[in-house]
Image (tube, rainbow, N blue to C red):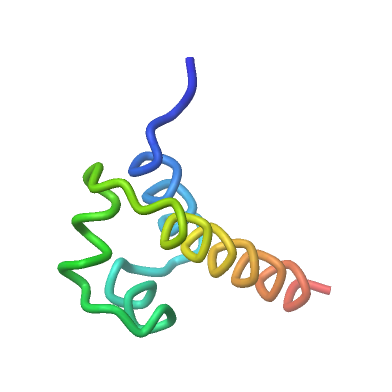
Length: 66
């Protein structure tokens, strides 16, 4: 079964030690707007940006462990 977008983002944020507020700041969007996207208000462009930010943070975290 495929995870919902909200669940994927929450899982990654938790693993990275980041919050929705951190994500909103990185995207330069309000936290309430990011929350509405995560809760199902479809916006593929913003979803791609969210996933890109999460991937960048994950790469930074991995690089910091080296």
